[in-house]
Image 1 (cartoon, one colour):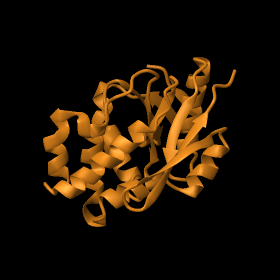
Image 2 (cartoon, helix red, strand yellow; image 1 turned 30 degrees about the vertical axis):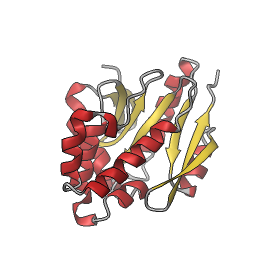
Image 3 (spheres, helix red, strand yellow; image 1 turned 135 degrees about the vertical axis):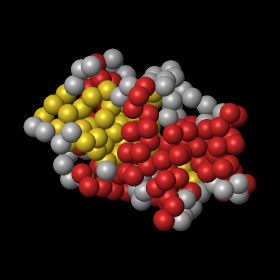
Image 4 (spheres, helix red, strand yellow; image 1 turned 45 degrees about the vertical axis):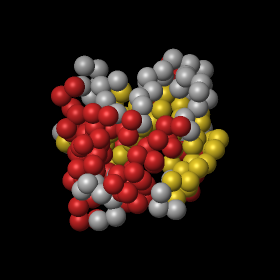
Length: 206
């Protein structure tokens, strides 16, 4: 397996055996992400429920990278490949019982989650692209450049295939951050919780 290293940071592609690690990392990293906080307002239960949610959202058709720092997995990036657009979670009938269980069989809460996931999928551009599905760092390892390294690695992969990249963020700080990597806002749309999601696009670079 190929790795990318820098000092004590190691990036490596995730394999089938890394699903639990990815779900755990992202569940921790997304604890205070606005969309997830709106869907799961109970802070005391949010992290384990986020781990369960990511275990449903992740698929083997995605490409994922893990950042290891001090021999511990501390950050992850998950990408949807060009042309491999999965149906929204709410349309994956096999996952509906698990999704209902995650939201404690509260149909309005489950419906809001399905609506949010569907809105994101419906706003993805038609042109083939890499989609940054998730990028997150364990709070204990933030400020070490792990997310930047993962993002840069993924953008280089997209550029090598002459393919643009799409992502979404729900904060103005996120917009400003990704603009530094060549992204620009191409649309915005509302989701539950009174939030606005910004879709951002980065053309392929030679």
